[in-house]
Length: 174
Image 1 (tube, helix red, strand yellow):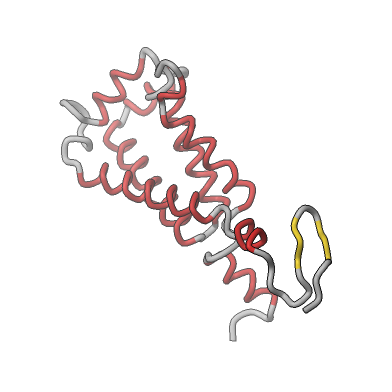
Image 2 (tube, helix red, strand yellow):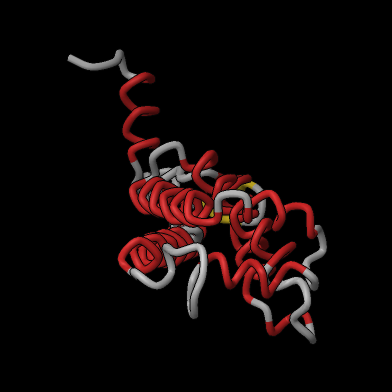
């Protein structure tokens, strides 16, 4: 067994078996991908199956939620735009969360899915949770930051993106 080749901050072995640090670094983003993927799938399904949520008015509706957040939003014009078709906006958010969650979970177009998740989180932070005080009580900003590493790295392992990359590298589909 030959050891001693050093690259960056991780020691690698020439026999192809990395150390536990290499393995941990290799899969470091997987727990984040799983958490965000499952959470966004759940959020999307929760909205679609909640009959009170997908209404323009009434307790627990998307319309009422947006009207109550309008005056405290960072960009009230965003809320006004969504209020023109609150139910359509509600379905758009729910379907967006489903698409982002599934894409993140299976690693399909990982960077694009993460960007979609970040945009959803940003829009919710600028509207619904903007007035949360102190700011760290609101979860949308934390979700926005959680998407950042996945935007940068994508889904390099245990993903459909990795399968496609490998197939392109070794001659495509046969």
